[in-house]
Image (cartoon, rainbow, N blue to C red; front, side, top):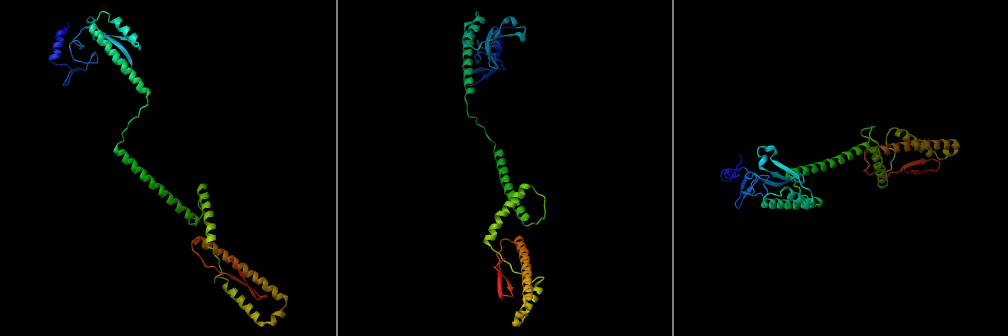
Length: 296
């Protein structure tokens, strides 16, 4: 048999797990407490006839307890849904608590008013855009900084490797290599930009050196000198000697041209930045006794 006064004496003076004492007042943590204070009229355990309001996912319910259901704990609290309209909710409370104590009805209406006000404030705050403050751990910031530094170093290294490979491909260090079309286009563009500038800034001209065929040329020159020393004998030789001399001069000029072009290509591949002296190639014509200068 339940006796409210005995229960209150035990709870108040011995022990209650819902009691929370602070220097100014004693509070109650029981979810069915209508005021949140630990006193005789507000205690849900020491009152056989009790009512309160609770919020369940944004919906308000009126909870009522009577002495007739004390022997059935699972059916102890009767729940009634309250409408969202404040005035209609008050009407429902008055209807179900018509013969209850006036003080308890007044406390329930105060609780309904307070819960309705904080629900309105919650809706306004949800619709309003607010700044969200988020903290970043120090370790995470340091880790991101290290990653950025490593990424920058890697990017510069890639550029250096690409530059070196392009230079080697231009010098034909690797011979014929299968590479992507994009790289080939870049190499061709760079070569087109570099070569005209080098040719304009460093004009290079070549003369035949002392290689294979040099002795033959010297012998030919000696033969011309010996022929030129005879004087009148050459004039009497006739047109046949002049034709042979012209043909020989043309052959020499072609040979010198081919040698000069080969050396020019070889020097460009070896070093483009080296300057070479301006040299003139001289070709002699016997008939006019003059030297024709061939500039390469």
